[in-house]
Amino acid sequence: MSTATAPAAAHPRDGRPAPAWAVRAAHLIPLVVLPSGLWRLALVAGVPIGAYEHGAPVRTHGGESVYVVSLTVFSEALALLALGLVRPWGEVFPRWLPLLGGRRVPPSFAVTAATAGAIGITLVWAYAAWGIIVRDLVVEGDGLGFSPAGFALLVACYVPLLLWGPLLLAVTLSYQRRRCRD
Image (cartoon, rainbow, N blue to C red; front, side, top):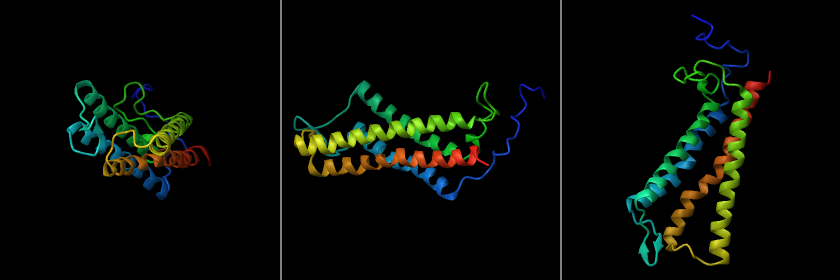
């Protein structure tokens, strides 16, 4: 086996098991993202979810539907990446990856990317929650066009997203402690 295809040298900090709480938190992340994705898919499928525009149920068409479904798939895929912080493929790149397969994941890369993602997600969803709940509902009244039940469903599906960033940050901290400290 040549040095180009040899597996990365084992590092003394690699292979340590993640704490049970971090594993649970990492598995919880895709679950807190799921309700909003299901809500968006229901909107695309034409399920009556209490959203109205000009008195008629909201419908998505063509490119808008593709965008909404793509956003849902992309969001869930990003959420699933959190599992890499508690699984072996977060320490060594999977072999099927070109150029990187079998090499050690630099902890600083994973920690930086996950921290930036956690901060970004926290800011985006905090701003969205502020905009929808405070500005649109309290200040301007229900200008969104939801029935009361529809608005309650929207809130129930999107409020869990406020946990995504803090959970990811906690799992990232656990990863950093496990991979970067003796």
